[in-house]
Length: 602
Image 1 (cartoon, rainbow, N blue to C red):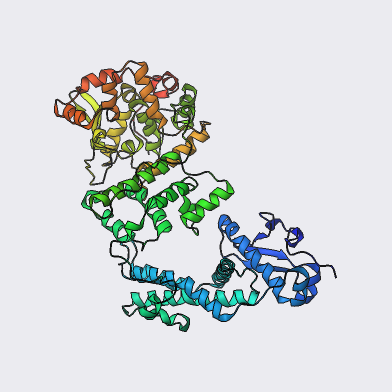
Image 2: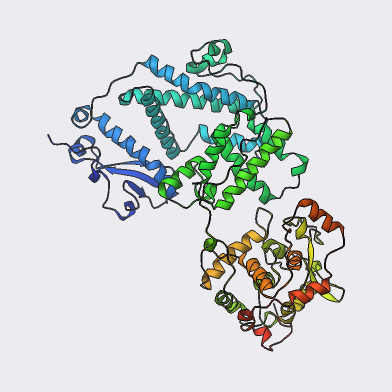
């Protein structure tokens, strides 16, 4: 009898367009993915079916691809084991494993999970997780959907096979794998039920499954050969230290964006060492592991791969050759972790920082690949769009922020969020000179963010902005009773107006065919600096206009701030007026003698 191999390519269903996404992968009309394989011809009659499908429990293609190999393996096992007569013809014989050994392997697997659970139950819920959220998650894990149950079975089968293989029983038969998988599932269910009882106020912490009852008696567990539950040393866990760090008074005013900058590093550290691990157990190897993961971690990993851990997302991106986060992003994460451990050192929680001196593994950008100013041609494209076809006060515009923010950035070199969060009170006349105040003060009672102390400054309004009607626009907003200068701009969940604007500007510049990889909104700031250099504007005045910190020691900077107030506004106005962009000024209609009022503007 001739039999088809289990690994034959024709086992894949390839006759349907929906399957051509990936071999063995199909998508139903409802968007959910399935693993599908054609049944070999010699098994069709015996199985009374032509194909086998297994639900992957997701509508996300990347997640489906990650789960596909295990699902196809399950189908192979099903085909091989369900027909023993055929099994002998196509696969090597497998042997049963004694139940006593399977129980021993299950308990060995369960021991560290039980220890981690005991530690977790000793901690309060994180402040961002409510009791209801925790209960809902536990119940969803305990009572999954039909598709979720299939995925769970796949997971335990794969884990059971891995445990048997590591124990030297890679030839275990299907029944033995199934028994061990069921033991693992029982252990997790017992822990989930225990956690649920704990949230309901039960402080007993007693396991109920007969297979794991011995763990309720510490003496029996400590006397086990591995001694895995021996009494642990005292000290703060990683999770306790993180909570203490974030609640420190010096970090009480961290913005949502800065807090988010720590979140990635903390989540990755939790995955690498475990949230219940003692802080003192974190070592240099763990830090280097984080360094390696960051070298492969894709941007927006939690959004793009919601069903994967950060470690899984990094591994998937590395295998699929997806681009990783930028070197600067990785550097910020490592810097945040270094700051966390310096704090822990100061608090005498650890003896030294294990992240000191670690640099990202991403390749350093060559100078020609770093952010550069927009070219004259690119500026002409950006300011020749339909939006700038007429003077602002002569057209109906529902997005004034999109019109004015790029112009303000071009002629003042200000940061994006500094401009997006401006209020009408920030446009003022001082010493007979119209100016823009970049400050944390808010007439609207909002929280405003500046990068550092040097960013708080008063900058003269460039004469070009006055000529194109910016002051008329400001007066119009004031008459309407508005406090925010650009009410059309929306705030992202990070607390910054710049995040959403940045996404729009990325789309806008591509529409205008300004799509070099090295360009983004920050190029306006680079361009302003170059224009100042070309106009021989003194560097000290450039730093005051842009809100830069001079390259000097902290002591000298402090002394410089203590003596005088810097250059007067009139002097800065003389210098900023030298900055011109002819490629823009030749296309702006407002500079071509066109002028009209705000009447009739919606």
